[in-house]
Length: 162
Image 1 (cartoon, rainbow, N blue to C red):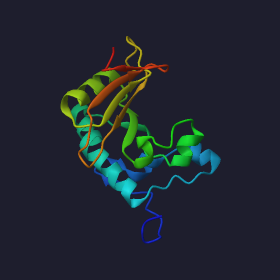
Image 2: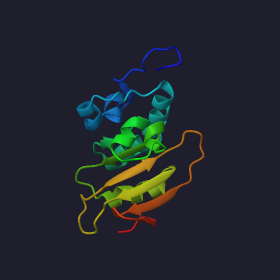
Image 3: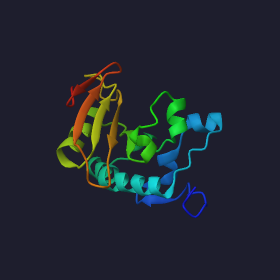
């Protein structure tokens, strides 16, 4: 609910190329009948994330960014085995791919060119350019750590490992 007691809108563009619907969609939430409605503060964070990271990335690669996970309510995070402290719960994180572009290449470009809090190349396998996905978070307050990691499904390594 918004401060005025009204639900936050769940549709509409939040930036030129991204909609609130794609940044909040969840097959798990739909299947389980869970409410995944963000607050206005979450929407503000999602907008900042899109402006700072997703829009420039889309422009750089001149291709659609396919969001697999954006905002998740704390309850939804718990349901999928994530933590309620995840930056997804704050509207500060997104998982995505660009079809036909190596995920390592996308992550490396973000690392070299954009402001971000955490950048994780997840489940990427060298020699398999379409494997895994890119996770990136962004804090609109400017307190971004620029932490780059690779996650192989078992452990994290510092940096973007190919």
